[in-house]
Amino acid sequence: MATLLLLRHGRTTANADGGLAGRQPVELDDTGRAQASAVGERLRGLPLAAVVTSPLIRCRQTLELALPQVTPVVEEELTECGYGTWEGQPLKRLAKDPLWPVVQQHPSAAVFPQGESMAAMAARAVTAVRGWDARVTAEHGPEAVWLACSHGDVIKAIVADALGVHLDLFQRIVADPASVTAIRYTPLRPFLVRLNDTGGDLAPLVPPPGRRRRRARRPVDSDAAVGGGPGGAG
Image (cartoon, rainbow, N blue to C red):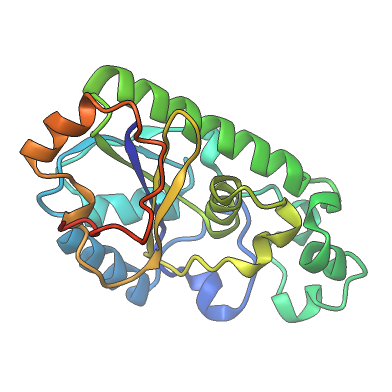
């Protein structure tokens, strides 16, 4: 199966001010624009078979700066969690809300007033990326690399699914602004290849041509490398 690169949008004005943007049209701040340009340098040269994005402007701005030559496909199911009445409020104030401990410790039970449940957010996001991954693999082969730009909680939920851990543990996962997380789906299980990478070389995520041809014929891509394996450059 293909390799998914999950890109979180760059820092926004809400991030800088300590607020919860939710689905509001919050844009990147100067730091976020610089982050987007920097991650673009890391992505440059990668043969991305597809680029999809949350419809929110902060994700679209990130891709405009990072991959200006690409026209991404908008995927509604990758939008931010619907935080309902929590949107636009300072996190310090929200931390006093009775729902806050549920969000922190039992997020699978969290339902935001006039908004979405975290479980529903996770389900739609995972379904979307797995569907896209299957299409990319069918159209471009099992060694294709594709990118999806989304939001912190959405990315954390997708990572939790890839790790096979309950959504109640997803608050242990970190996805910083403009970070890249890589997941390789296989017929039997996903592999988390990178997590919250904000400066590493992304080129090793693309197998060299010779390795591509060999791996495409192997039936054991779901096997883990006993002992750790040689890494992407091996």
